Image (cartoon, rainbow, N blue to C red; front, side, top):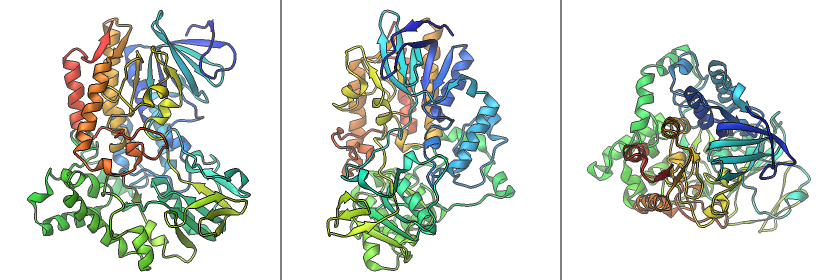
Length: 549
């Protein structure tokens, strides 16, 4: 490391030490740690800057009651056998505490922590064209100058606080699920309100219902959640899950979402209704995402095929809800949107808790929230719902938010946030024009939100690594995606999206949960195999679509 003095960028206060690097990685979750481990093999100077005080990315910040993985534990880890052969989760779907322990295990094996700067939030970056380096500022006075920046901020790095007046007036305690106190919070005996019924809402509602004196759930859109089928794992179950692990990991590159299973086929119409219902019943009993990504691709593209799955889901959920009026709100006769075009949540007893006397559902489409008061939440019917604790499960500025939150200024004078105000163009979901020597993993127009996180972190991450390896081996000091390549990739993503039902929902997939955000599909809808094929074509053509010098 070389130290000197320079004027920091972004919100960095004062002058500070400059760290000279080949590669600066932003974020210490799965994607960032994979890059650090791989890039060190090239003999490059690499550091991770991480805003949190510990490893894990989203698993550091998301420590609310019930926070857990929605992927089988064996696949929610790195594929290296020096990591998985002596690691077991205690549950089939691990809680955040277990995932944190896993990251400590990874650090112990790979010695990653020595190259990570914790409590170091990257606030801004500007490209020095003369030196062909990024000058990067942080909130603590540290500055870096790096040949390449790899942004590994994840899809859930920027929480959204709802635009509800009066939040500052609330006399109780309130927290966003993604900004939960690290030392926890006792929910027992409290009057709790939860705004939002997405994935985090489902999880925290299940836990709150066990101990709250009263729980009020404010629902805008019902969650089409699928059964998790959680299991505690004994030694025999752990051993069974380890069978053919190498084959399971290899299969990730061959399946749409990087899971151990894939669509049964392209067309459900090739099967009778009875055959389909038998298959769907089997997937329902097995649990997980199989009813979403294990059925047929036309379920995500054809209304009739989709409606059959929705009706199957609805009828099975309604069996668990005693009150018919409540059943209609939680599992409506008519779908609120096509099944699967919002990422399904996995639930354990979510629908059952609404049978409890201490749980109440408030439909905010019928009775919108007017404001937060000192005592609680006031709805349009004049009722004031008195609360001790208000939980905001209101989601994220997903996929792009973690990137645009950093004041990254490109060569055209615009920040990344300013450029993407007109919509996202990102070549291969990994780079964008006017931002040379910058790549992002698990970002916009990559498989990201459709994929198992560790699978995407490794599979897309390996393509990023190979590109850096190519640039370094050939002495290249500058690369940049062309404007034409950016636009062509966006057209490719939009073309696939227009052939599906994803555009029919106001989801975070479409950026529709953020006021003013351009409505477009923010994740690559062609699946992991097609995505990797596109990368292979680009590499075979000498990294076509990039200007390299």
